[in-house]
Length: 174
Image (cartoon, rainbow, N blue to C red):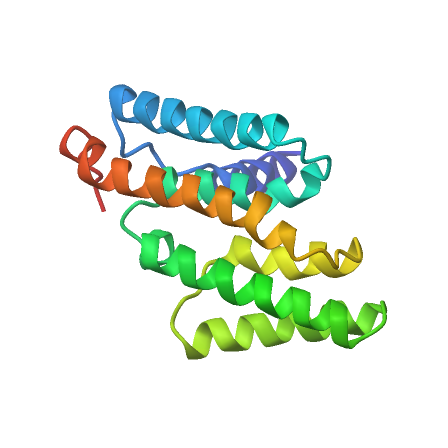
């Protein structure tokens, strides 16, 4: 029985999260910023009558990344813009060129990931976009502007405001 308790305590210690490096005030700013950005994304899509809320998923994940990993290059405004532009173009191209099949989603994913690495604009949530476009068989180019471009615009504004204004108050420890 003691070996079992010892083994359990070792597993517990190995799985325990690292101590928080951010103060309560910093965690509050991150939480409020993420929540406000996600609410803005949802409200924008709601008021523009976008019924496909699945397209909102990658943008919500990006909003969380902007606030939780502000010093990473993958959350910079340029990388976010490039990655979403690249992935949406690839998604629409694959929908128009190929009929729906599982391999088409895998090929779009691999193409997006490879090009993002090659072009040094890796932003993982953007890779979800072509999969959603292909799985939903979205062939309407107006989706490229509404909601995709508008949601990217919200993310770019959020990134700009966070980097220019909030970073003065939020000193993130490495």
